[in-house]
Length: 112
Image (tube, rainbow, N blue to C red):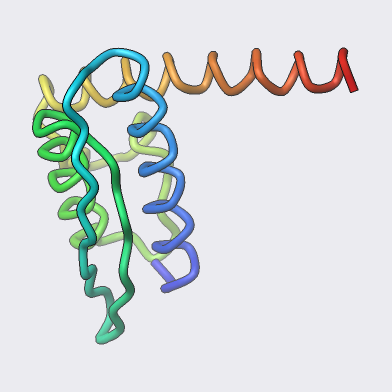
């Protein structure tokens, strides 16, 4: 996976996890993470509770180790790397946040 795609994936993951966490959990903490990918590093500031931060870190680790040149969607991956319970948790988070972002987009279109 190219560096730009990796940064895009991590940014999307952060956005979806923060939306879910802010709606569902208390006690978010802001952390700055230094993420290394292909001999490059970048900083990512996340505002999550401990549980969601653990999910975020797990997902970043899986992205860093993705063996595919062209990363497929995880649900269509021929060799899934996520443990089944973790995958189900992340799928629930992505579904929830995607729905919320979709409603926000619809609201913005209707009332703009």
